[in-house]
Length: 196
Image (cartoon, rainbow, N blue to C red):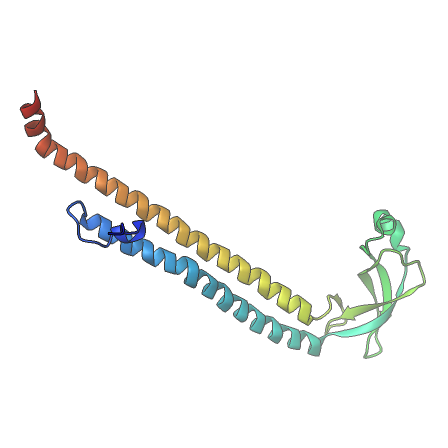
């Protein structure tokens, strides 16, 4: 006869099985389902929700932002010398001047490539009040944000499920220890008296 696998021993009827063993087995089964099904489902649902939200934000941003030509008013390398030396495409916050789509002149600070010199042209984004802003979200931003938040939600759900499993195991062990102590107090004197 083949031995019963360890994971099924809690479910079988045997003389040493206690109610706490059955409760623990069911609870750990639920924790396993939460870990292997619930956590990924939570991550996917969260990623989908974030992606839908960010798409709506991108549409709104595209409708309210304009890209315009701007003249750089100071050397970017003077503002951020390491940007020019690093060769990594670092940007510097420098003063620029622009003409908005409605013809108004504007001046302010904008992030530009670190190798631009005074008088060179660059492209910047303006909001609906003709103030410098960030570019609208693109599809890469949307997918990267959704993937990052979805993965974080999955990890958080999995961590919560694992912590729940640890707590269930500890509570069950405490309950078993208390039951064993109670039973020993009842049977111990009789058992030791007969062997002394």
